[in-house]
Structures are given as C-alpha cells and as structure tokens.
Image 1 (cartoon, rainbow over the protein chains, first blue to last red):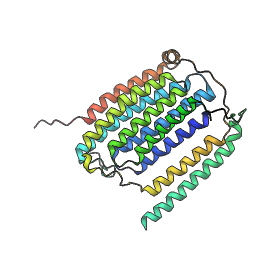
Image 2: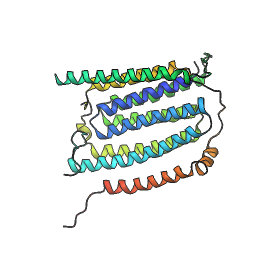
Image 3: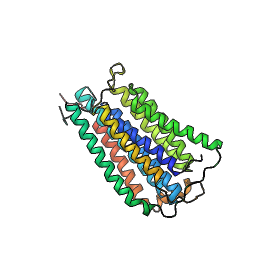
Length: 102
Length: 209
C-alpha cells in the first residue's frame, strides 16, 4: 500500500510515544535528553508530512529547520548542564540532582 | 501500596486526557474533513518497500533508545532512528531538511551525546533499567498516547491535496533571507548565546587559591 499521510503520522506517533516512554522511565539524564530528541524528531516528521500532503509551499519545512536548530542548541546546553551535574554530584541520576550547587 | 496508588492516579489521569482529546477531536473532525477522500490502495511497488524499511529503521532505533539497558546501545539506536527520519524526509521530498538532519543531528547532536555518555558513565555500572516513574505507569501513559495519536492519524479524513515534489534548497534559502529573516537572525543569536552558555556551564571551575 502506497504510503499516505496517515502512515507518516503513525510513524511519528510511535516515535513520540517511545520518546515519552524514555523520558518518563529513564533515570540517566543523558537518556532523558535522547528521549526529548526523539519527540522533537516526531514533531518534525509531522510538520514536513503536513507540509507535503496538506499545506504545500515551504513553511512547514522552514519551521522544521528552526526546530532542528533549536534542538541542537537545547542538546548543547542540556549536555553542558549534565556534565556540570556530574562534576558536582558524581552521578547523573535525575533524582539525585535536586540542588543548584553543592 | 504506594505504587498501586500511583498507578491508579496515572490511570485516572490518562483516562481524563483521553476523554478530553476524544471530545475535542470529535468536535474538530468535521472541520478538518473538508474535501478529504479515502486514498485508493495501489499496487505494492519497490518504493513502498523502501518506505516500510525506512519506517522500520526509525521505529526500531527508537525502540532501542527506549528499551536498551546499555546507554551506549541507546545512543546507537538514536543514530538509526535519526537516519530513518532523514530517509522519511527524502520520501516527503524535503531534500534540504533531510541533509540538514544528517549534518546537524548525526554530525552534531549525536556526537555530543556520545561524548556526554563517555564522559559521565562508567559503562559497567549503568543502571538504566531502574525506572523513575515505573515501567508500568510510564508504559501505560505512552501506550495511551500512542493509541490516541494512531486513532487521530487513521480516522480523521485529512484534506490531502496532490502535490508535486520540487527541489527545495534554493526556495528555502530565499525564504530564510526574505520572509523569515528575523527568525533566522534570532536563531543565530540563540546559537551564539548557547555556545557561550554551554562553555560557561560545562567548564571546570578554576579557583585562585
């Protein structure tokens, strides 16, 4: 069966659900960030798919590009914070980091 | 006892979310259904097979991220998933976004994540399978959301229009420097701020004794 809009939406839905599951169940802060990346990718697939099948033009693709840029920025700052937490607490368990300083 | 209570709370919360979105989508679907027609099933071609392979790569990689006990395997699963998403972009005739996905995500973000994994983890003692919310409640919430999104994806007759795929790189360049100039410059400003902020946050404190 030829892939239609619904197929892309279904793939994105599975990606988003798996990303949400990762964010909810992992205790490793880096893994939580991976889950966030999965969810951002799922939303990007939706943006590009709707752009191709429903809206037309380039607005959806441009917006997806901005999402990619902001996701890169988020990953950089998030991982810097994770490294900082690791230096301070010697662990990256998300439940251990409940203070901003030692 | 406490986990049971938690589970019940999560179940009730999920039920409330389903109900709210169900009512909302039922009210919205006539508006969205303008002129939509069910697609006709065509013959199965090679391109369809490639699409399903790419989709399987995406979903499989994401499943590895979500379920693998080793954080390094999770990172490799993320690699597969991001590659699959780039393939989906190619299928959606979004060539520039696909290349940007490969460059930025796989060349940048994934390498960054791998660095973080190696710097923060003694691989031998990863305790990833331990849940912070619990597998049951987290899985329940994710499954409920997945079912809901799948129903929305397949049940709403989207107003699909046939559109030809054209090269997008040059038009995106023009759009970024004309229509979206201000967001474009703001994004560069955010990237600069991120660069400085990440360095300041992650550097080791050097104290003058």
